[in-house]
Length: 614
Image 1: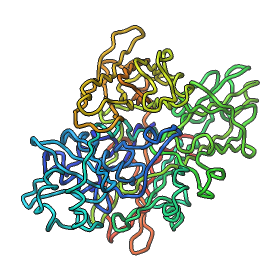
Image 2: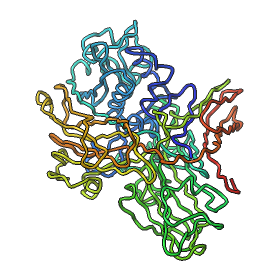
Image 3: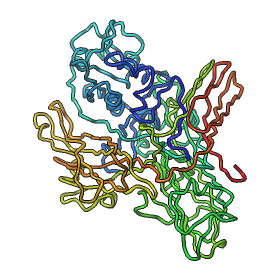
């Protein structure tokens, strides 16, 4: 089993997390204006950067504020696109995450535009990856929004990365006259590119769309210009400024096909949890007569997406995740909340379960196979799970002409072999909040959209079977006071590792008086002194907490055995297909010599089965 496996190339930052992103050699030793300029160039570059398309929403909350994705790691890796109300706070989140300085989101109502500023060297600095603009003086120093409003010289001779799509005279006048609103902690963090790759599993990512598979949110259906954009070839998300990027969207596909017989260790390597089930001569079977079960996890750092049929409806979406089973005496069920609740599944065809209605738009699920009867009679002979995801191609490890030096990496940013468990409330519905809590809140009303929970709530997080929580990120969407009243905000996050134990504070609101918006986020990362089975995270909403999120990074009690990893790059040179395969046993560097300018096609990472067919 491989933990957070990834390949990093010379000209792409390791975007596993903002911590690894900050270590990219191009900027890891920089600070101040030099760091800000390198970040901006990278994020505005047509090959490595982000592009404008439209809003990015996940989930089914009643209020879009809680559905909008403003996590930099998600936007960089999963989507690669957004619009200004996302890209502004994402830039602020990156600035803070790499240590540039405190950051804030700027809202310009007169231009219906959102950007960001970072504070370092005693003053603010404007950064705008949406319309491609910073105010950079000839000496390399960067100016603030206020300085740009007052200084005409900042608007001339600025080069191609300066409002390339906008009339400068008009924009200059808008910036001079429009009021500016300031949002505090409008971004969120916590998402990391964690997954495990098991024996008998392959993960392939493509730079280009694979047959029309994307995150299909109904919000796009009511906008004619956007529907026209989506339906143009290749179908799906793409930039509305074509010269801002060479990319559209990409896809990935996980295929898990373990050997479940006693001739292989694939089952022991890949099972999430099991009771009274063992590998037999034909496959999985009962150890003793009666009932047993095996649970397998499907977990992706990329959003699970369907094959989109009619883009105006999700009714005929399909193939997001398909389970193919050759078995007798079994029943399947699925959990989307880490095993707290289960739903029984019905096959879409004999031996085939299309889980699209359950899992499209999520990041994973648990699949439970229940066996009933006698040993060797109740049996799972074959299991194959195929799961499609959406990928931002700009974040993939790319090749160039000449000698390419690449590195295979595993583990989290602490160097630990962890897997992640995600807890995310949808507090607009009590059943999607209360199941995560120790007890119901004293003051909770889902109809109060901007003040759902007043006071205290405590979430309980149990590590997956056979694991302990080594570190975690705890976050929430809060309501805040604004302006001069901002200092009265008392929102907070604390945690404990035992029931009834002492709670440690990790976040206390400190909202600046410039804050002009009711909504704010907070996310804090904690590495525990000792791993724990159970984690308690307590939130204090004053004035209110509206949704919570926790990413618990867990160590296996008994780490799974090491196995060889096979990495395959595919590309074209002068229209001719090329490929390079390398087999590694553990992290390390490798090289690929490319003779002509390449066009990247795919990268595949696989852990072969140790069974007869592996």
